[in-house]
Length: 469
Length: 119
Image (cartoon, rainbow over all chains, first blue to last red):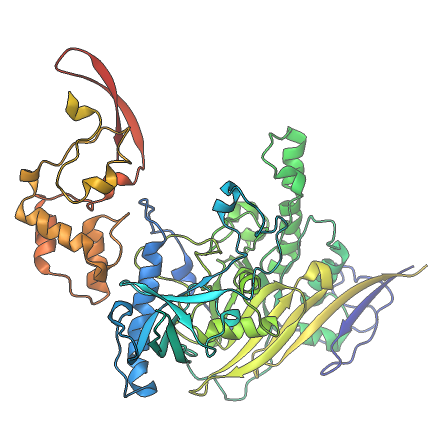
């Protein structure tokens, strides 16, 4: 017998198990508990702020990545220069080339982390392979890594124990107080990050409960994804499951956001060989299956989809929105919205910012922290979504701006495709409050995230399918 | 004929570093008397690191970017660029091969050769 189990975090809800399988869609109500009148879904104001991530107007003219580094340095340095007088009022600010031995001063520039184990294309040509292991590690850190600060005039190696290479990566712009030592290093005495950006105050007046569901890593088409689990999620969100109480909770869900890795195309189709026509149609099946599933949701409430590392979108960040021709069924609904990765939007003046996880995963390869939420927090404090782009993370070669610079602090900041559900609230120096969320991979964990817009409380929605003989 | 083969070393600053790259290319040389004062000013603008790297961007766009960032680039540079008397692209532009095509040219002696042209 097939038993379907729906489990909610015990904090706020009670649950009545339904042993009779899925409710048929025609009746639209669970047998035996027909409410007097139908339930209406709660509405919510939405504004998309993805314009900075769209590459429609950019034109590639053969430029290199030095342009985006210059734009980033200029943008952040201007800001850091305004902070330095409050931070260290008695020390002069100078450029790298103006450093004098023994003189304490403040320098601002981009950090570069020299990593011994970082894969380098030149290693393939080196005659001796003794130092570099042939097997790629998951994390490229090494005790000998060191940091270098660079600006347009020059670069200087950083020394001292205040600044730890294990916490930083290439691409961050910081201000440093210190002095040049005899050996030519810059001995760091203090570090200044940009800090959390300014935030528009969270609307505090008491409002009704409105929920946003965050899901990622559906991986439709992969062997690890369970279609039954996703169908359970869809039925729950669209109000086809459960009794009246549960349906009333589901009616308060205002939006679903899919944070990347919606499909997984089997590897054998992607190795560059010519495919037979039978294989070509098989390759498109995951997307077709996803379209059918998404159209069930789109028929009920607004949804946003973001591309991820395994989706048929461009590789480099910012990933452009998946084309609507891939979703002929879903895109017929005006509730269906294909968005970029990273994705920034506002729901009832609550600002959301999130990615499909590439920025956090890349930070994990090149630095260390006690958990993934700490990586998220660091990117906010550095005011940059993806500091390792373009060094180790693919990125579009912008010439005059850096779209990953975070100008306004979000209220909710999420990263998709993580290993487990984690969440925390962090506070900024000017009273900013941010809910950080790691959205787990649904195909592996069966967990989606439900966030209450009224107070930013967050809990897990866990779906399981168990077979008992 | 010599002009179309290996580039002669000349005293202009740029050629020593680019002569290696230009071995197989045929590129119009920059004779010294072509460096008008406007072109000189633009070369200085290209080399000034305050406005960022110059490679890969047309000069006017780089000027506009500097303007947008508040770096106050000299107005006269913009006038030179708009007048059309100077090169649109930066000093090092021809070193970054982009699109290339071939054309057949003939020498004064009557032989012909293939020239690679880069945009």
